[in-house]
Length: 298
Image (cartoon, rainbow, N blue to C red; front, side):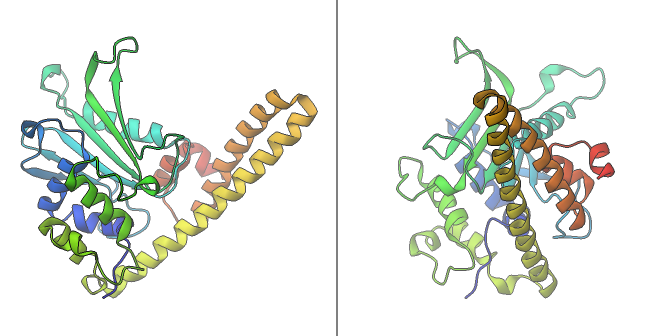
């Protein structure tokens, strides 16, 4: 039995965007709910903003969006590579979902929370912890919270099965995300014993996909590899330029200016590469942080 990688856009959407019971189990496990009353019971899917009928095409945003019977909204997104602009994009999308609930002249008290769950197949923090929970809090007293927006970032490469201090379903779903891929020949029995995880695993069987979907899947990973090489190359060039400027202008100040310039050049280089691959302007803007006007000029 051959399985597909659970971290690709199309596989993530197939598991959580087509099966409400799996999405509910996953969200209840990964979101920071403290009581059973907070947990999700029923969901209704909300179409992703940029989704089209060309299903599984690379330039479609196939993140999972849904809301429960209370009106709370949940956004699940997989990010293959960490970029400096990603947090701003997450903030923008969640804020837009929050604001869009209210019609002109509506009552602010009707606004329901938006939870943004971001699965990152990369590392971005110095913390040893893989799970990061962001809220809007008062600095001097973190118990004072402005409710409405909640951001969860999960650094997938940092997770290990030793993290059993977490609740059971959280560990099982994290193992599903990090262990099931093209190299999986035999799924661990402890995963198959759980009905939700078992069902999710069957959705990743190669036989569950059409030939066209499999071609799109392979193209997706080719593009990810190309993008990673571009980003890595741009970062090396930016660091080297920063070192050279440091020698000329004073090490500390030169490093700062050079790296900033290198990061900007990295964004332009990545955008050019994505344009050559046919990625839409909207997606390029989200990934690089450049404006649509800047991208069009490239």
